Image 1 (cartoon, rainbow, N blue to C red):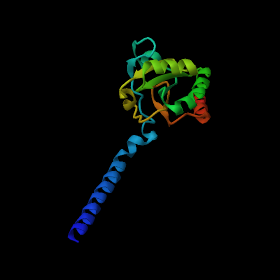
Image 2: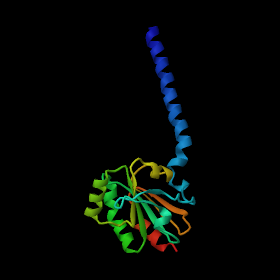
Image 3: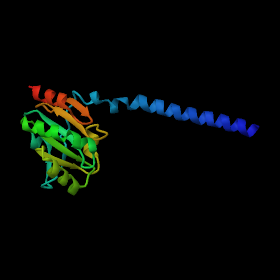
Image 4: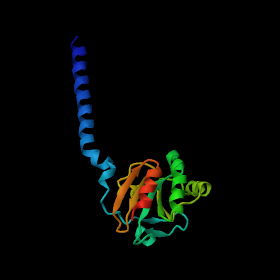
Length: 172
C-alpha cells in the first residue's frame, strides 16, 4: 500500500517537473521561433564556400545596393522541391536569390539543382548548420527577403508561395 502511494506521489512530482520544464522552455524560446523576430534586423554578411566553385564568398561579394532573397534549402527536403518552381519564377523576375544549402551532400545538392533548374545567383554551403543558426532558422525551407540596405523585411518558414513572390516584386 505504501509502495503504491509513494509511486503515485513520485509520478505526480515527475509529471509536474516535466510540465514546468516545457512551459518554461516555451516562454523563453518563443522569440527564437517567431519569424517576426528577424524582421527589421540586419542580414548577417554570411560567408562560406560556394557549391560550384568551392570559393569562399560573403553576401556582400554577391549582392550590393539591391533587394535580394536568401533561401535555405536541401536536396532531401520535400517542401524545397515544392517551392522550387516559385524560386525559378522569382529568378525570371530578375531578383537575385542566394541559396544556402543546409546540411546536405554536395553531390546531391548539385544533382537537385541540375534536375529542377538553378534559380540561385550563388549557393553557399552550410554543411554544419552554422549559417542557418546565424539567421535564426530552424528548418528547411526558410526564405528571407532583404532590402538594398541589408535589412530583413520578410521571413517565410516553409515553402514560399505566390503571395511571397508578389511581396518581393512589389518591394521598391
